[in-house]
Length: 152
Image (cartoon, rainbow, N blue to C red):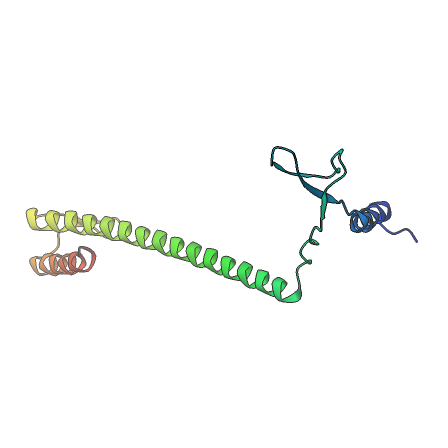
């Protein structure tokens, strides 16, 4: 049975193991001018202090991983809330635009009924008829109600 990516896994493991064995010494010395120097090689005079380099910080523990997961979840929740707020704002803008259109149509229709008492109306069968004055007044009242609803 062949393990996929076996060579890459071995190479990565070898690199990690070798990195633990690398331990460079750091030397500190003061020259004749009073300057402090730091180097990986000792000075020619040989008089230098060896500085212990602290080990690197440990790999993230479970608490760190949990904290990172919590931060990621918070960020995702914030992004989701922002997206929902944007969608809500877009829906509200569409609703406002539709209300403005409905308001304009209702206002235009009301003007037409008020300014033209002899207006003809085409029914569902395609016949043109003139509404009675009662029907006209009822239509005017309906349009006024729509204006009150849409034009705020």
